Amino acid sequence: MSAAKTGSKKNFSLQKSWKSNSWSVRILRGWLGFTFIFAGWNKASDSGFLNPHSAHYIGRQLNALIPSSPISKILIHMVEHAQLIGWGTIIAEFVVGFATLIGVMGELFAFVGFSLSLVLWLSVTWNVTPYFLGSDTAYMVLWAALGFGLWSEKRKAGSRAPVTSIVTNIFQRREFLRTVGIGAMSLVAVGVASRFQHKLPAAKSGPAEIVTLDALPIGASYNFIARDGTQAVLFRTTSGVYAYSRTCTHQGCIVDYNGATKLLQCPCHGAQYDPTQSAKVVSGPAPTPLAKINVAIRGQQVVEI
Image (tube, rainbow, N blue to C red; front, side, top):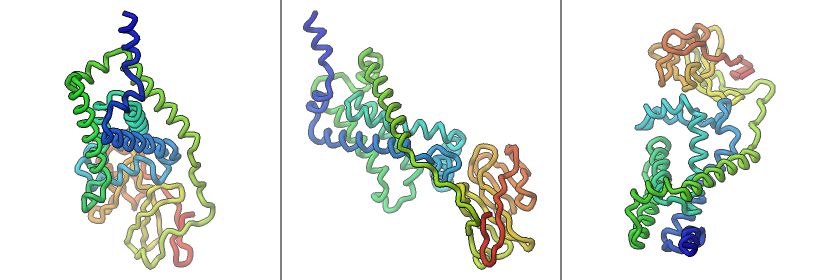
């Protein structure tokens, strides 16, 4: 019984995990594991990724993808919970990366990695042409190759079918503790990465140039990024210029100006704002008008003040 227990304890080791793989599987594990850890680190160390006031906030990125993505309806719901989606993505990338390098439930996390790459392809790189310029399809193939490679090696070694093995392993005490350990490592990594965050640039003092009057005739509108990173829209009329934030006050989606209706419209839940009446809500679920951005004409330039 003592020998059996000893053998059980030695059943898993990092060295054995790597030695049991072919070189092709080792290369895939190394590359994908490191890349996903780096991806998680890159997001966790970015002070703007989860900050709604940043130009590269996850919610703004999702908003920009809605018009061209085949899963736009899903992205709309993701925008409503953008910070939660952002945190989930960071932690998932760390977990998948660490699990792949350490060798914990390889087939399961290869499937998770494949799924993440699939979502990125359908949202971020769907319109990249030719297709081989988009990296997400390549990562989908790499994760699929890793998953089938691990399954093939276990099959040759006489292990159970992968689905049965994964379900069984999840409920095994040691495998459960290893998975918890991977999760703890990921949370620590998030904490460490957050210590390396760069501060958001402070808003510049004084007027900031937006566009020339020649490029903005009377009756025209112009989208721009405000000094605080907010996506905004500028209007010019015979009486002057005015601007509003494009962030919908309902769930934070980005509104667009519809020249036919003369209204600012939210693509997510249908809120409409009238820019000629201080961007007040004229229909839809938005509770308040769009935020005003102070602009003025200085010489031949429209500036934010």
